[in-house]
Length: 344
Image (cartoon, rainbow, N blue to C red; front, side):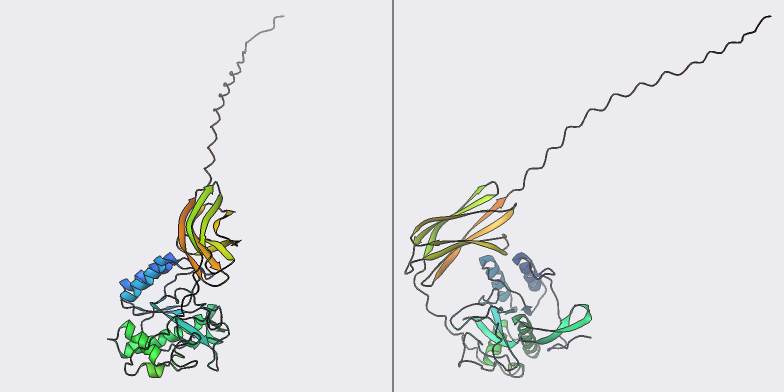
């Protein structure tokens, strides 16, 4: 029972970082990363992702790279066209190998995310694998492509145990089968990973395609303030410049302090100045991000505030009722018995 792995004989560890519904916190992922550093792990395969950026999260992946660990992650299933950048985090970080998905014809899977940091691709459409209860199913997604690349990296490491994470990463790039434009492109990266070529001699690491020039100067927020009144929260921002845009979508992303994004609240502006949004939240700890996007392109974010909404005070304990006075004991019944005689 099971599916044969691509690199038999390796030591494989499974670290649970998400719940049974597939969601979780960046803090749990970072705890698993620390475990990998402490236990000498060489390669990690990460079939999850999100659009919420956190500098703390990025620094954690940098620590993993600095420890000599090669991290491979699913690019995401957000599709996109050339020029878009729909790759999710952590795959989008510079220290992580971003993996796209291909179909049986070595064409990009219709859902596979694109972007300037996409590195390689692997089969990810209708891949047969194990599921719960000892059964099998066909699954699709860059989450299925990611472990294909991880097993190739593990093969390379087993053949060349002295190679660094940077050398293994470069070998994956240099030996991939080109599927798109020569060199690197946004749809296939360097191409379809090739395990036979990858275990050969070290090939110089080709560079990623340089990112496109930045768009027109984006509008930006100069202040972010969070005002709390009970369970009502008002976010205030000051838009300093519209740049080349004539309308701006300004919104706030609110999530947990660990970085898991929640809902967004949006307002549209046609001039510079103040803007604010009010919403009601349940008790808890929150992180608020401000972000603005102009209709001429460009975006700016990163201003954030941490705040807490305390719970309602506990209901006061009721005053104890006085103990009732004890009922007096009933007087005992006395019976008087006299002997008497009847005289005749």
